[in-house]
Length: 434
Image 1 (cartoon, rainbow, N blue to C red):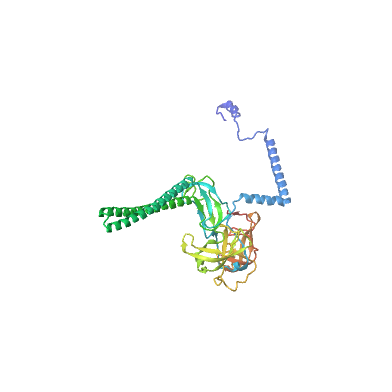
Image 2: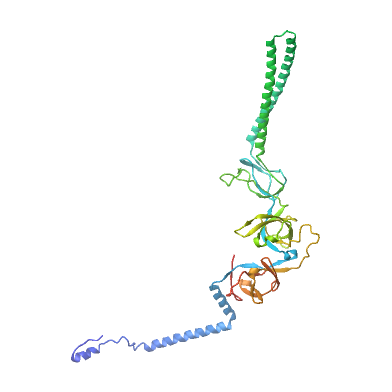
């Protein structure tokens, strides 16, 4: 701050000016010393840290893993290198599907009622027309008894009327003789004739009444029979859908309207695989063609299959055609809805062929979308431990529908990346799609 003035007072006042850009003389050397100390401490810490990292490679690796965990992991789709043995290695087409019974049904009652008794459990073998459950039917028992009593009464009345007819017939025969001897008037004869005709007519009425009573008995029997839930075919109970005391209703869709079925039965002796074959390869599949079926739940076993039917209808959304393959040697280990893989063998192998195909040894196959090609080199990206990528060079063999035989480089069972990217490298941590 400067104050303008005149004469000597101006010089004196000029000395009162404050210089803000000049540091304090008392603290200058202390501040510089503190800054020097802090700098030396930081440099020492950096040196110690560098020495620790250089002397501890494990810590460097941990640091690398930490950095990788921070980075975003590329997401990959994984396929498996499959192992195939025997004739399935020569399959021209491979398709996946699910087991199903050729005959399977949810069995319900034909009338509404409440379950009085369930006679079967899951896994029980039943025959055709066996009783599976019984509904309450005390009222129908009473109605049947009443109908049977009415039928019995009509039958008795009909027998009684037969007696009346025989009597009136004899009376008429006597009247004819008397009329011929002129000992009876025509009016008296006509009365006997009318009585006989009336008896015959009444018998026809009673006969119709008896038929009606018998029909009502049959109706009551059928209504009572509807209270018995029977098996329409021989099979195995695979699901128990209702319990004692629950209401049952034909077409029931839940608790509000009642149960729709009591049990579900399936014919486990006649199983087949319902699979979808791509349109591009359906020409390689024909009815009667031999196939091998691998079931995920039964590893190490191949079942003999035969193409039972090629459904003449395509699925344009999925570009597939449905094929049903019957299993000829099904056993107790197979159940409906199990995941299965069908290997369609070459078309020249048909049912009843005298010379079966020669079995081949263990072979490894890789999905085509997992193969990477650059010039003459072929490789795959293997997802190893900790989901780290490893580049493995392979030797590819024969190509088949959607897969290629791997002659060397893989042993089978490896997780392979479907598709590739220029950003992939050995040791890269990826995220596997679920």
